[in-house]
Length: 508
Ligand code: ATP
Image (cartoon, rainbow, N blue to C red; front, top):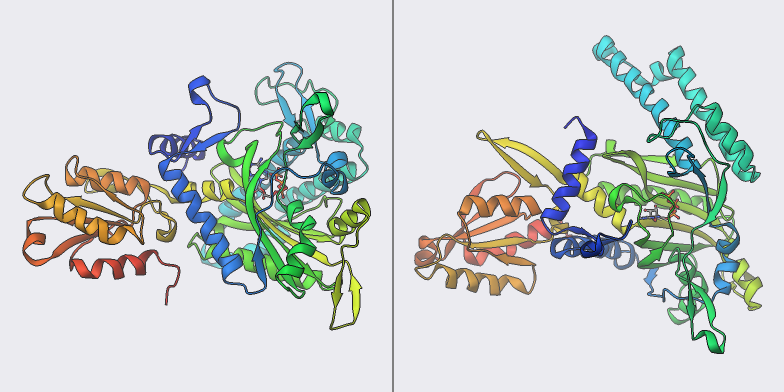
């Protein structure tokens, strides 16, 4: 499909029509950048979370889980740097009155130049045919080299300005690049200001002196403040990791693009604690391992890329993103950060308590270094949804199918009696009962069998089981495969094994 915006619109409409995602409080005209997950959405979301948990916690004997509270002592956020530095630079267009993130305006400008490079490469590939050497072309073609230099110099200047907290230069850069507001088309910009993204609330009644609290903007800090509790009670030796999934809240300035950028979202994070000096080895390990996780879902590797951070956060000594090609371009899906000993050290200072590990191998106590993997569950949901949305033509008819990896599909099998009489529903319900304990199944008897197949295709159900008159005679059913649309006659007693093979994690 060529028109990405059109595809994105369709994916969003599909998500609503088939009960994946609804706008929050839609009855009251909605709440900006907050979403609810419907019956199919919650299943898919749970399955993605489970898949992450299994591969991070259950499959690694040196990673354990945690579920810390959303509310934390306010000193946590002072220590983590969020009170002073969790800001986004914002800028307004005076004519349209629209607000933007200055960094996003600049990054989008760079992305437009990068897409010019892509176009040049495509053109040249066509021209040179089989003899085309992309690497050589990109490093020698004067136009492409010029574009690349431009991108680098813009990002370097921006990183420098942010490091120096020089917001005047950020504005100057936006003006020099000739960036215009997409709504008004003008360059009539306000100054750039910093805006803190944390939501504030209060605990206790104001009469007896309420405490100001924040809704956590990341789950990571719950892990850091529990480092010693977990290490001691689970008797963990370095290197080891603590993983958790849970809600995070950010008062995002610009929250467009559906569930890509939300004000309430869910993170899946893992903090890996290592001996100082070994962090780069583990950083490389987790980069590789997390990329493999994405590829294990069968998504084309061309859809992913690494993006190294030019502008390192205050706590990091190395950081990169795994970007996915969303319908609106390559954007961050997951971050892998080498956070040094910044967080633990800072909690040690602010709490006045020692947060250290005694390493029996070298007979020394120290504050561990940390490598973090942090992925947004909702962004992963959007990755799966947009990657699996397909429109096909089958025998002159349009078929809409979500080719979700079967282990993540909301419904694993639909059980469909061919007609509503002759004992077929009873037989179908018997089959449903036998599968329900292990798989999320759906029973459907309304509409023609073709229509029922289409509805299941549209939510990504890997198998449809049709119960017909023959089923009563010889205990067989037809099993229809979502992707091949092939139907096979099989014995009812084989169903459990076949579904299990299709949707299970163990592929051996
Ligand atoms: P961005 O640059 O897109 O704002 P970030 O660099 O601030 O993201 P991190 O703080 O590294 O993001 O958070 C880790 C992960 O949490 C991100 O990779 C993303 O998947 C997810 N995430 C962050 N902010 C949001 C949000 N507003 N909505 C949904 N997911 C988010």
